[in-house]
Image (cartoon, rainbow over all chains, first blue to last red; front, side, top):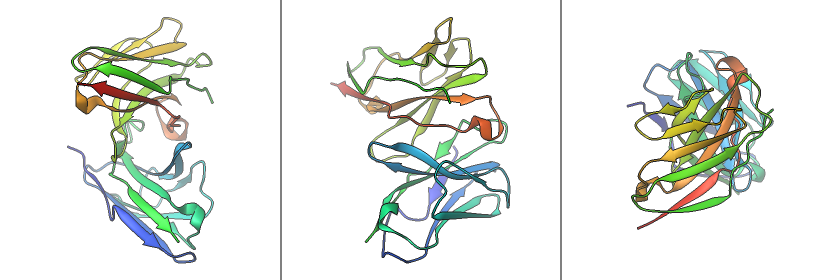
Length: 113
Length: 113
């Protein structure tokens, strides 16, 4: 079974802090994705990556950056956390040949105070 | 991008079939139809996808109308574990950034014992 793990289930940070969210997958998937999920807005794509060191902006990249130094790991970085970044963050991965069959992690609920 | 329309909520009885509808009247010829579901407190889970023909897998069946303007996800025997939000998603093609998923609000399925 594909496993996608995220570093924390719950995280509380202060405004202005730099925040790192880590995601690791164990199935050698080429593609990795970061989404955020908010009530009434559904899931929105922040960034995705097709390969190591490759990254592409999704629909809402402002205020975020990403890093993919190894194939199995995709990090989401909030350079200076703000209260409007309080959300559920979901990581996903997929094979390069089947990009839309995505496997999701359990999510990290981030609260910025 | 083509949009999907789903009912906000549906109810079903345990062990009965469930038909979850999705309208996508502006679908184009290369758009794939995907279904995901999200159980409470979990990340979304891939269910099934198709292009033109009906599809079956161990989780569900996907019935696609001949004109492709609508589709139906069929759960053959609902269980309590099937209570979730079900998302119908279109993606353009099946590769590259054109294949990114855009999640809508989905249908919340309740299953009564």
